[in-house]
Length: 232
Ligand SMILES: N[C@@H](CCC(=O)N[C@@H](CS)C(=O)NCC(=O)O)C(=O)O
Image 1 (spheres, rainbow, N blue to C red):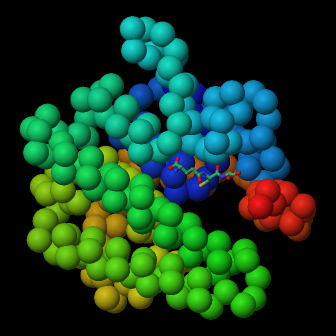
Image 2: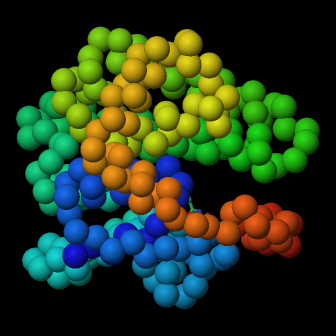
């Protein structure tokens, strides 16, 4: 059995999708980051970075419990555990790993900062918003070019490179991205959204209630590490 420490953000959505795709049994343990639950000593022991997702696989390597953080590492671990969504062929395998890293190091951080500066940082953020949205449009262009030539991110097969990118690229409305420019990404989003496992994952995610809508200014300062919570 796997414990998934979760809320509803894109990095967590990846893991719900992967667990559903692999049909692995799991318990969802909610960590409401809007209520500071990521900062408890119990959760900090699991993830010293105090972020979701994290998993504990009670049937880990050698049958012992194993804790993992970072959504990209969790996807690789689950792919290797089940032998699914990562090819054995060495070239294709490294194609998957490369594109997983593209998502982890580029798409996720750029989209996260674009949302932060457009929604949560207050007025006067034009430079930051333009910078992150420019980087995002570059990334949508790169994914669109790939998907104009092939069905999935690394070729003919659906892999963890798709599962990692999907929760971010599907957020185009929130990110204010004009999808008329990226028709192949749009078709790929629709195709992945129609998968049974993905539908099951989003039913579960949709049922999660967090304190985000009622977060006070102090809750937001604590979450974003600003105001009296800033360390620099
Ligand atoms: N690189 C990490 C990012 C995880 C992350 O940023 N999680 C956010 C939600 S999307 C979080 O838990 N934030 C709480 C905090 O920073 O206090 C991953 O991909 O797992």
